[in-house]
Length: 242
Image: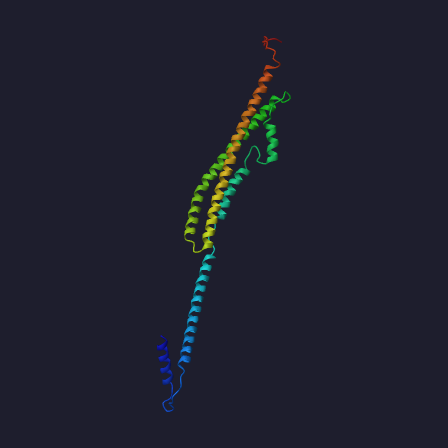
């Protein structure tokens, strides 16, 4: 290779000399070869720089793809579905979900025992209130169940959209964002499950409390009927006396 380059360079130099002033030129072969090798190395360096720039350009294109955001967000739909279930709970009638308010109402309607000072009318009103609380708790639970079923259709569509966009993601950012939204969907479903469990447990707890209070009321009514233990003596009643 070196010999060929040397021959080409020599021929070029000789051909460049004018015929009228032709003269012998002393050429240093080693110097000429050194210059040719220097030029070859320079060309190789240029080629390396070109390849490096090409690689950097490809890297920049890859970075741009990886930083391209996902043009889809299911967050609004997920929050709307969660908010709908939460509103049903907040609108629940009967025993309040507020801790302090619930505690005072519970103590009043579900007493540990009735005393002789409690009138029969008050016990009847309390029984009515307990029945209403149990009914409203069951109604709330069925509403939340209905909302959960209603969310199934939208959840299925959201899941399909997110999976499709995750599979067709052009970069790491899109794939990550799609995955995060899938996790958000899973979290929303878990929260909805907790909401449903809360309303069901509340209905069960209030029904058990109602039964316990009903037993206590029945005990007090029975005690009042029996009195102090003296046997009841029937007496004749004259409906026609004046």
